[in-house]
Length: 132
Image 1: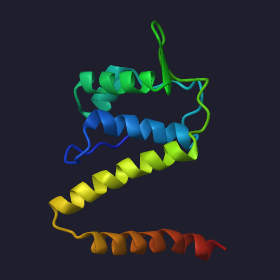
Image 2 (image 1 turned 180 degrees about the horizontal axis):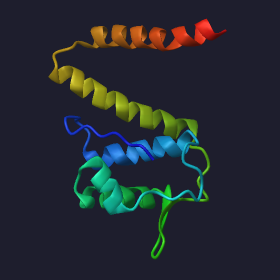
Image 3 (image 1 turned 180 degrees about the vertical axis):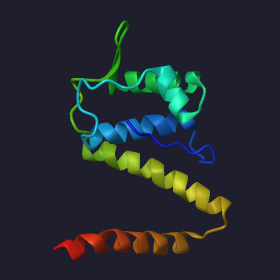
């Protein structure tokens, strides 16, 4: 499981972890009953405090995304189906909020940000168009 965190992000680190795990589950990259890294191992990988990872795992457990098995670790809930459209949109909205906050900190107006999103979208689609 590869996660990326940004200490400069306006979103707290534990929520970055929660959002990324939700995304991985929603996209099917984390399957039901798949195990998550142990708290200490993930904390070392991300170079953060283990308490931050523990908090993220608690949030995920309360949301029903993961289940904790005392002796064997933390697993993606077998009851989790791909997230509903509303939940997927919520995940994207949270990421947009973080992007908007960062853009404001860098004095980038919304119109410029939207233009950049369109440019990046076109750049991402260009390889797909060439492959056809």
